[in-house]
Image 1 (tube, one colour):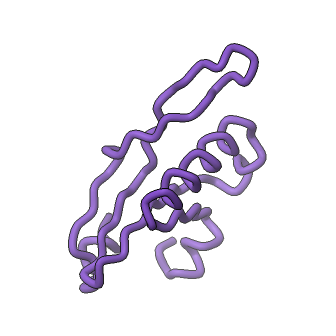
Image 2 (cartoon, rainbow, N blue to C red; image 1 turned 90 degrees about the vertical axis):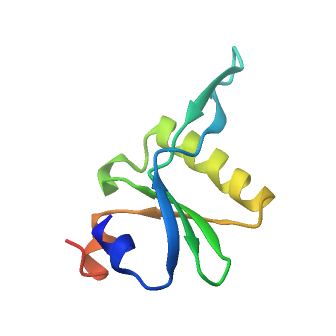
Length: 95
């Protein structure tokens, strides 16, 4: 959050305020809402959804379902979806 606040390219951002529907159970077709960590709008007009997850959780079925739904949701809107782990955060100097 401090990184987003201090990035001069960021116009504004929100935390867990963008609902994305996904099918949580294929058999029953149960639909749930997923609220990704961040929505970011940049001054140049770009928009992206950013999710922060520990690397060890990336293979979990629920994480995969949510990520796929978010990728499709972003694609439909001309946006980018990014999943960041502690590895990317360290590379960015944020950990």
